[in-house]
Amino acid sequence: GTKDCSCQLPGMQAVFNGVVKVVALKERVFGPKDHPASPEARATLSLLKSSVQSFFKDKTLEQMRAEVEKMSKMISPPSQYQITEADCFGTKALLCELKGLSKQDAIYVIHFHGGGLVVGSAHSAKVAVLPIFQRLPANMLIVDYRLCPENSPTEAYEDGLNAYRYLVETLKVDPWRITIAGESAGGNVVVGAALRILRDKSLPPPACLVGWSSWFDLTMETESVRWKDAADTNTTESLEMLANYIPKDVSRSAVSFHRADLTGLPPIFVSAGGHELLIHENQIFAETAQKCGVKVVTDFPEGLFHIFQLQTVIPEGKCTQDMTFAFIREHCKSPVGAEGGASG
Image 1: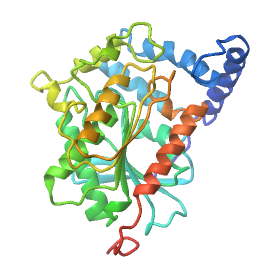
Image 2 (image 1 turned 135 degrees about the horizontal axis):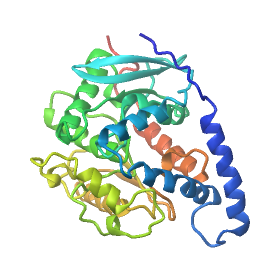
Image 3 (image 1 turned 90 degrees about the vertical axis):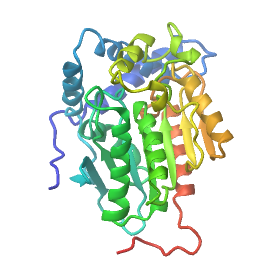
Image 4 (image 1 turned 90 degrees about the horizontal axis):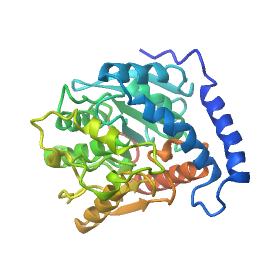
């Protein structure tokens, strides 16, 4: 049934945004004048860095998972969405439909959350992504994909295939109206799921893909993941800790996509912060995709940190969101000769 969207602290995001603006004023007055990132971005990083890094310190996996869910319950998703639980051929997901948006021509975004492939859920993700994609506007299917170490990343890719099949076969959504998107580890699942859809051959491909600050290299081979004292919320140690949750019988190179055969992928928007530890693997992925004949649009703004794209309070975050929306609108168009609207 429809979920109750009430919560205890609906103003928590507004409070954070207010603090960012105060710290940004200090940065504007006393900070470096030649820094490539905006004062708002530098303020957000200073507020997030210590809290994110302390999140990984001396916690069990169960404690980290519980904390993510607890924090997410402090913020309400937009009331404009009707949220229902969906069973996508055995894969759990949240179907989030904008009230008043025509189902016949709406864009649908299948979303995979971040969390290092080990923490997070569709319920924790909805409070972060619904306010963003409401601006597109789009309906969303937020996937509760299977996590490590209980499962392999390949099972998360299978969940992606199930979610896509649910939209196309059960809800009768035209493939050209579907985008698959994710951030951080979710960006890895985006590509894994898209390749799984291509291999399946029973379904047409989606219109396009979006990866924000994607964790494409689970082998940790690129130079930037070893940067020390980077202006980023990630650290080498936290990435290594997360990678160690991948089951030992899984080849990390088989679930890394920065040097994979990406032939046949739909157009993809690749964004990463210029100062984040994952920047090199995102740049290599974009080059690899282009060599495989994939249409790629890149966005690597200097001075930015991991998943800055989720931060509407900073101008660079809103700019990347707007670029993403333009990319999605460009590709989610009715193909010549196709009938408008969903079939069935």
